[in-house]
Length: 266
Image 1 (cartoon, rainbow, N blue to C red):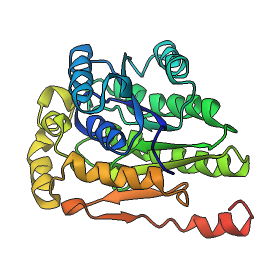
Image 2 (cartoon, one colour):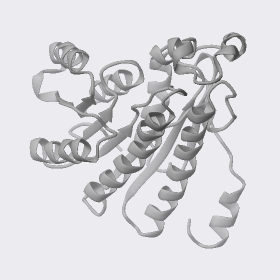
Image 3 (cartoon, one colour):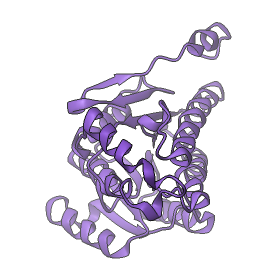
Image 4 (cartoon, helix red, strand yellow):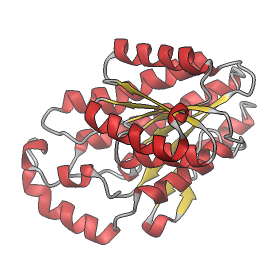
């Protein structure tokens, strides 16, 4: 997929991974709708991008992605502004083991809703579309310091793969892929060391610190390069791309794919 003239929607776009995803899309000629609940940071990143890419290249839409009303309104505004949607990135997420229902609402429910809304807008349109959902290493390997976060990211991986196969079987023309990075240099790293956010498990902070030291930390720009690969490579659907130390990326192999192929769904 060539990105010049394409329209993207990125949630959690005001900072961290969302900002990096937005910038790499802009660098490659796309227009980007920036969704974030933080209005101040959203306006700041919009102003920053305007200086390099021009004011017409981005639109900032304040949005709480856990709200069905807000998210539907944001999608409608994207269509009103640009006439179409080609790329969706469900990126917004948190770690909050204390308020676990909020974590599920943001990390999983909003991804499901965002994916279905994007499918509804993009299916059968000329040129199709692509959705990239952001999971985590914790969606592949249990992260004992954050069980609820782990559950949401496992959910993102499974939901995205199943929906990708469903989209292909229904010939919607929309690809769906997953990013699963290790620890990234974002605000979530600080949250992992905040006792009030860790529910009944603050005593595991030393284990978390050892895990971070052992596994390593990567930059948002490293994850953005992998994101671009999933967006532009039209052969990729239902893939999970893991980003490891120093930005090395590899696709995760799932044995059920052979069964799906034999059933004629691939």
